[in-house]
Length: 215
Length: 215
Image (cartoon, rainbow over all chains, first blue to last red; front, side):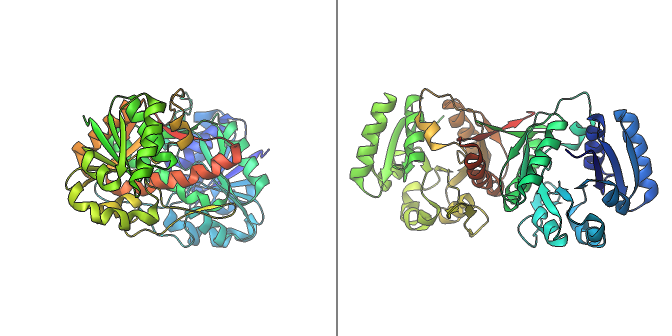
């Protein structure tokens, strides 16, 4: 199982929440950012929150440091940030947590993608990487609250069977259940759940997640 | 709350399963089919299974008999079957249980729709109706097994607030929880979950459903 994760675009709420959970689980975490300073600041905050090993710096630093690389960028920033990192990432496992959402006044919509999902677009940008879609549906605020056990499942999609199992193990490391949902193309439906939960959250004033029942 | 439901295209596994559940819950159910004889046959089987009141006949009969009309047609048959029924349906609540799926050898895909989801296309075909999307994610075989308590939530979307609440009450009548997911346009994500669960079911050799956690 992966011992080191590098988080690209890791200074937002989702990235910091995952960083804290992985660090608490005993993994070495590297938080990357466009600005090395912001990466270092986020790392210091996550180290304190989790009591674990978290360092930080640039996104290139995260691409190099992580055995497994986790992408927590907004959809619009993917190409610009990831293309230059392709050589450093090579054939590593790359976890897409991205949901291509666009927020309006009282609504949320999904942005058009090249291939049908953000995760497939990442595979297009990083053709040698073993892309796995996961962790899109965990609420950032609940991730960051380490005293709260996560209730939601992590639905995992990939065209690389070993990488998929590895990410299921990562999901289990932070106390969630990883559910094998097959091919990477299925990530479009998981990204859609993120959009759906925005509306559910608004109606119930809660931060919700989903569980698969009947397994 | 609705006392009578008419099920259009109700002789398939999903229609018969819902019919049996609603009849068991004490509602009057009318199962419609292209062939009156098939509708009557399915009704007799459901009446016996549920011990409830189930009659059957044509789809026009279902459109007339139901205070609320439930559509369990395949996506491809929607326009042909529903357009002629528009006058009979009028402003009734119409529940779309349809997921626009296309099955290949080892895969499932979503068919392109006019408006983004089968439910929105039904609203286009029946402009006066109050369309509500619901019940897409309950496995037909589990619906038909009346000794089995349904574990999955019913995620409900509509642009008609009162109709949405009415369908949440219908979901609760069969022992499930209805979750308000807002606008009818969100039904695309719920229909996507149906596609996603096909892959999960294949991987785990189970008939799964989803629950929203954190409400």
